[in-house]
Length: 356
Image (tube, rainbow, N blue to C red; front, top):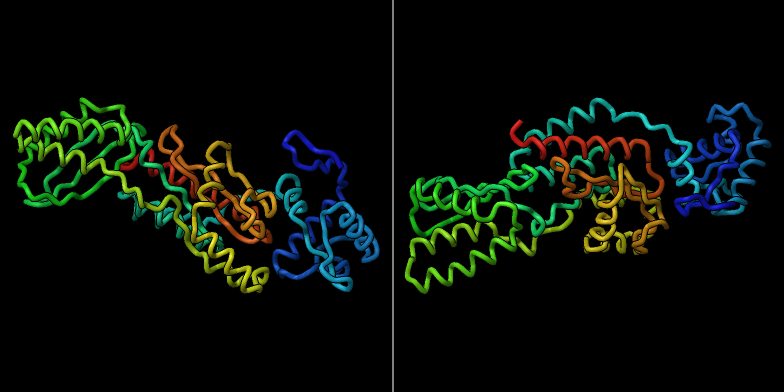
């Protein structure tokens, strides 16, 4: 066994027959969750081979680390390495089911006006369609580059702040105010802040406004100080905001792999901590296309029983975050890849053209 340019084992010498049998074992195991025997394959996998021939090939695959035998009298199950070969070389990649695509379009369309709701809905759809765990890494607001800021008066004590970032993404926030501002005042402060701070990040702008507030308050220009306070509040960053949205963690409970209650509790605790998921999903930000991390390839040891299928979503040409599915290594990878890829494209389309 050699290693290819990616550092992964290279099974270029795996012949067509061995590849077909390995693929058949994986398909059968994904469906049943049970070890797969040679007789099962000879009866139901459509292989024109005798049980003895299948058994010999499966034995060879086991020696090569692609199958394992949980018990001496049992059939065999795929290893993480087998799933890697399957994803990289053996798996066909059909498009997403048309019904699922339509449902995703409809669900996200109803949430496209507000980014937090849109991303939460994306996580829900990933979980619903995959029946695994849906995850969405949200944009880091500290990196947002402001293009335009404006304020619209809703009533005497409520104002909506509308921030447009450099990628064209619209962020809305409703602010409660004690002072009463008329719309022309709001237009002036919005235009001033946009002109002065376009092209800068939220923390940089807030810091500049905070310095100016000290000067205005000391000069007793309280009206201007109130307007600047409005601008500062519109650009506030919620330090406690969730970095990653997780939906459907309870789906793991139904998988036979997680019958061990203590192991399942550990997995759920890891998903709840979210910090480790953030580290994993941030690694996807530098990659291209849909990436698949299988079992023990996972740098987070407590997630080594799980696989992650993830890709990035964008606004224009700027990467904002990651969407993905987390589930047992015994997942339908082709289906998960099609789902994640499709949802990322829909999310990108809505974020790039929020009003279209």
